[in-house]
Each structure stands twice: as C-alpha cells, then as structure tokens.
Amino acid sequence: MDDQCLDSGAKETMGIWGRFIIYLSATILIFFLISHIYIIHYGSNHIITAKSVSSDLRSYFVTVVDIALLATCIFHGLAGFRSVVLDLEIFGRRGDRYFIFSLIIIGVCLLILGILIFKRFTSVMI
Amino acid sequence: MVYLNLSGERLIRMEKHKSNFSRKTFTRRFIERTLKGEKMGVGAYIWVAHRISGLIILGYFVLHLYTLSSILKGVRSFDQVMDLLENPLIRVGEVVFLWIVAFHMLNGIRLILLNIFIDLNEKVLGYSFSAAAALIIIISIPFLS
Image (cartoon, rainbow over all chains, first blue to last red; front, side, top):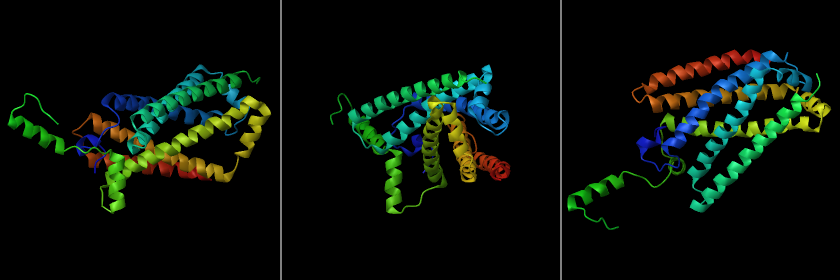
C-alpha cells in the first residue's frame, strides 16, 4: 500500500488544492518552527520567565516568527485533523460540514487566545 | 444507472474504469486490512505513524497554548507554572516530543518531494531521510541530561 492515495485508487477526502495548501503551510511552518526552537533554546539562557519572554518579544524578528508560527500551526494542525477525521467517515455529508465549521471556530478562538497571550507578554515590564 | 448517447463499447470501458476505484477511504481500507491480518508495505505504517504523530503534535500545541495562557492571570502565575515544568521527566518528554516533530517534519518533506517530483527514487529518499532522523536523535541525546 503506498503513501500516495492516487495510485491505490482510494476515495479522496481532500482535493488537489487542499493538499497544495497543506504542503504550503507545512513548508512555511518548517522555517518558523526551527527559528522558534532556536530562539527559545539559545535566546533565553535556558530559564524561561515572563520577563525573559517579554524581552525576547521586543525584537521584531521574534514577534513575526511567533505570530506567523501561531497562525500556520493552527491552520496546518486543524487541516490535518480535519483530514484524519473525515477519512474515518464517521459523519455523513452534513455532519462533515458542521465538523469543518466547528474546526474553523476553534481555529479562530485559538488564534485570538494566542494574540491575547502575546499582547499580555508585551505589556510585562522588564 | 443509464448512460445516454453511449455506444456499447464506451459503456463497457466506463464500467471497467469504475471497477478500479474503491468507495472507501485510505484509512478505512487500512483498518479493514489490519483487522483481517493482511500484510502491508512499510509505506502504509509510516503513513499511519505520520498521522498519529500529527495528532500528538496538535495535542501538545493546544497544551502549550494552555500553559502560556497562565500569563493572563499574572506574571507570578506564569513563573509558577514555569517552575513546575522544571522537572527532569518533562525535559525527557520534551526531547521525545522533538523526535516526534522531527519524524513528522522529515516524513512530510519526503511526501511533498515525492508528490512534486514523481521520478524520484523512493528508496534513496527514504534512506536519506532515515539518516537525517538518526542524526537528529544523536544530536538531541546530550539534551536529555
């Protein structure tokens, strides 16, 4: 059995554009994730406190990396989760639509939570 | 099913084409074959591992956001949570999680390359990424201490 469903003739729950968007988000995520891990490991002297995180976030590069990482991670994670659940064919067609809609709501909520956390960190006095 | 304006020959060809397609998804076919005890290629198990690792990473991400949200209760609350997480078990868990991320990332890159460049030698690609994964594991072992 191959990785590529196209050859095995299995029913596809994700079209070609869906796959393309997931691949694109994965490629972007690789760069931001490696940058984030590098910054966390080498930037904060291994001791993570609110002040150290806040001082890291004063840098524009770190800000951009963290916000972009948040958005792409949410998108890629939930798109993958959608793919896994829809492949199981638990719901019918209507159920699939409600499920996708609920994932969008969850994604937006996670994004808002992330931005609130980010704003709180930037307001911490160093 | 009625095929309008089709000659007998075209009708037969369409039915032959139809029989090559399964109406089941890949996941369902995998589950059915596993329950029947059928042997499948390594690719199928790597595919499943990729999906399971993705779910683990998603779970960690949500947990990560939850621990970071302690800053919304105040600076002291966040520092207390960070002190709680300064635990050798958690450190080991983080390194193991890094291996899971590395696997998911490398397998994802492999899948993207295979889907874009169809003529790539799958075995060479598989071995080179396995070597990269082994390198990541070896580099991360000192961080366990």
